[in-house]
Each structure stands twice: as C-alpha cells, then as structure tokens.
Figure 1 (cartoon, helix red, strand yellow):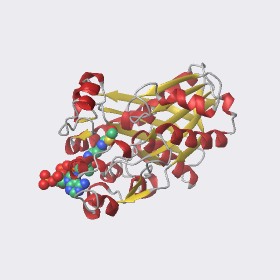
Figure 2 (cartoon, protein in one colour):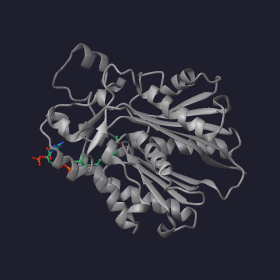
Figure 3 (tube, protein in one colour):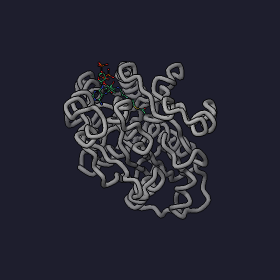
Figure 4 (tube, rainbow, N blue to C red):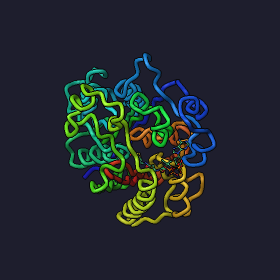
Length: 336
Ligand code: ACO
C-alpha cells in the first residue's frame, strides 16, 4: 500500500499585468464593479508576440516543480495536463510537454475539466501511484485565456474575470500512508453543461463552416459564455458539499483544516466558504486579487504561493476544492 505525496510545486505567470483600469479602456466596466463583485484587482495576460502558450507556461512551471522535488526529469513516469485552453484543437498539450521537456516516451494524458481540472488531474495521478503503477507523475494546470476572450462590452461579464498562468506539481510515491493525499472526491452534473461553456470550436457546431467560412459577426459561440449568478449559486453549494464529503471520508472536521486552497473563481465565493466553515483569514488562501481566475492553473498557483510563503508545513491538513464548467467539482484532502 502506498500513498501519493506532492514533492515539488512551481508556477509561472506572464509579466504583463492588466489592471481593471486597463480593461475599462477597452469595454464599459470599472475598477469598483470588478473589485466589488469578484475581488479582482489585476490579472496577467500573455502579450501577443511574447511566445508564451498554454504549453510553454506549463513547461516553465513544471521545470520549477521538478527542480524542487529533487527528481530528474527522466524519473517522471507519466504526465497529466489540465486545461480548457490548449494550444491546438489536437493533439493536447500533454505530449507537447513531453517533447519540450525532452523526457522519455512516457504516457501523457489531457484532462478537460475546466476549473476542476487540477483537482481531477491530481486524482488521476493519485490513483496511478496508489495502485503502484507509477512512482512520479507530473501534473500541470495551465491556461491562456486572454487570446480567446471577447474584450468588448458584450463580453465584460466573463472577460474581466479570467487571467493567464500555469502551475505544476510532482506527485510521488509515499510509503507512509498517514501522509500525502488521503483521498480525492470528484463529481459532475452535465445537465448544466451549457451554463458555463465555449460552444465553438467544436464539431457539434461545425465551427469551420459555420463560423470561419460564414463568418457571422453576431455569432457569440466562439467566446466563453457564463450564466454568472446561476454558476455562483451552484458553486457555493457544491464547494461546501465536497469539502464536507472529503473531511467525513477521513473522520475529520472543519476545525482540523490548517489550509484551505479553493479554486480562485470569485473572492466572494471563497469568503462565503470561509464563513460557513468558521475558518480564519490565515486558513484560507486567496490570490484572485492578483491573478483573476486562471481556471485549471488557479489551485496549483495558489498552492505554490502558500507553500512558498511558509503557510503550509509538514503535518498540516491541506484541503483543495474546486467547482466549474461541466458542472464539475471536487476536493482533495492532503496530510502534508
Ligand atoms: N463591468 C460592469 N458591469 C458589468 C460587468 C462588468 N465587467 N459585467 C456585467 N455587468 C453588469 C451586467 O450587465 C448587469 O447589468 P444589468 O443589471 O443592467 O443587467 C449587472 O452588471 C449585474 O450582472 P450579473 O452578471 O448579474 O453580475 P453578478 O453579480 O452575478 O457578478 C460574476 C457576475 C462576477 C460573474 C458572478 O456571477 C460570478 O462570480 N459567478 C461565478 C463564477 C464562477 O464561479 N465560475 C466558475 C469557475 S469558471 C470555469 O469553470 C471556467
């Protein structure tokens, strides 16, 4: 019997800072609205021509995680890459990471679970390690949102929220089963798939013909759509449920949590969860103010920052929780 343990963490965000005031020059929005509704002050956007892609950002984060874990890149047995913004329609970024890191021909899996992507990817890595199949799995969450957002007033309900960046973890075999990832809990409710979605490109839409060839300027389906209030209401319920589910599975209670790292969807959601579980500001890590919602990258970026700040110590109970498009949601319970 093995557990799996996070042995290295890293993140990368592009240098280009985009403030709320910067956005207000492109669309009818303002700093007060964005901060009040979301808590976001600024986010990072890859500058066109800088050369960063979802894959290259993931590789940069991965290099830091590999270095910190102390393993050699050739000790990696498997790659799991979570994103909703891949470089190509296919192949996915997992194989591009294998190529760009120059590692041997290990398996590479792409996870398409949006804001829950990293939690799902971590769960996959955890299962492979617990069965004894692999010893070291590279898990990446990376997003390049900014090149695909509607930066006009039409898209303001979505575009002000998202930012670019990447985070990565090395998940390794842990012989001490009281340590590491104790359990993961995953859910989905496809009934609400279209409430937070990007319909095209997708073959269901015949996007090449319907959008690129016909070029209908009123077709919004090639930009992300979000029914914000509906998503918000579902998020607060599902976040709470899946945290409780994870704690109960391990005979733990909310008071046992040392650090909750929620997916950075909206500061108001994190604050609601914090209040509900009676946690202090110190026990809940938020960085959405500086990066916006980086979707699959948000948990690994936040986890890395919390760890770098010394807020996560050996023996701590760390809880990760996410909710997003699908709907999908999940939690990870870790004894650090
Ligand atoms: N600037 C100024 N006004 C705006 C903006 C903006 N950027 N965006 C919308 N508005 C306006 C709307 O047009 C509307 O105006 P009206 O009342 O005249 O019609 C008003 O502000 C209120 O709009 P709502 O959409 O109702 O605003 P809400 O308070 O719901 O906040 C938000 C929107 C921030 C998106 C919120 O609903 C939210 O955070 N939802 C959850 C997001 C989430 O959890 N996502 C999951 C993860 S993402 C993923 O998986 C990819």
